[in-house]
Length: 211
Image (cartoon, rainbow, N blue to C red; front, side, top):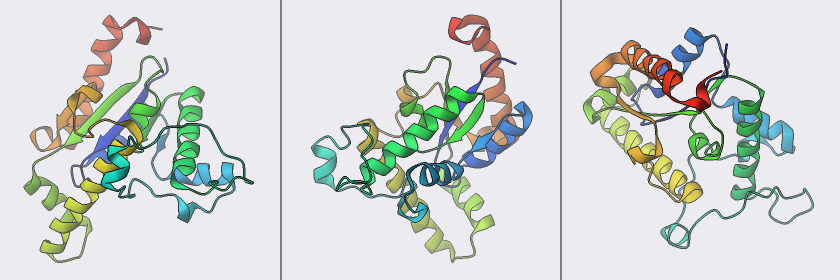
């Protein structure tokens, strides 16, 4: 089977993580989410708890001044070794290594941007209306509904700022992705089928995906 790399960015409650797992099972390829943090922690020797997991709220000043600038890894002796930017760089290193090694599904962490130079990557954004995201989030969260509403808004804000800081782009901008899919329209099974159908069509017309 030719190598297939799928990156999935997702709104909280849209089921992007579920879709990613289903895709990995259908294609029989590895799935990576928080495993990326564990691998980056092992590679760097930095405690996994220090990695922000898309939940770093960067200041407006940082965003306006351009955010992240360097992908150079710092040595343990450096003053900024455990700073957020260096932690992101370690995660990016792991994402590139996993993509080089073979087919996989990668969840979040700006993987679409990290792999922007790699040919044949399928970049997906999974989203859904607020009421759908709330219903899905309530299935796995025991907090009161009003608190879950706040959690959804806060998490999506975190992800948008994280993405803006490290890529300079808007998280929800469809131009960043090959597919932007509303999971409430298709359901999770249908969203998986749409991605698989896209891959099959793209194989016919994109030389980068033709083995």
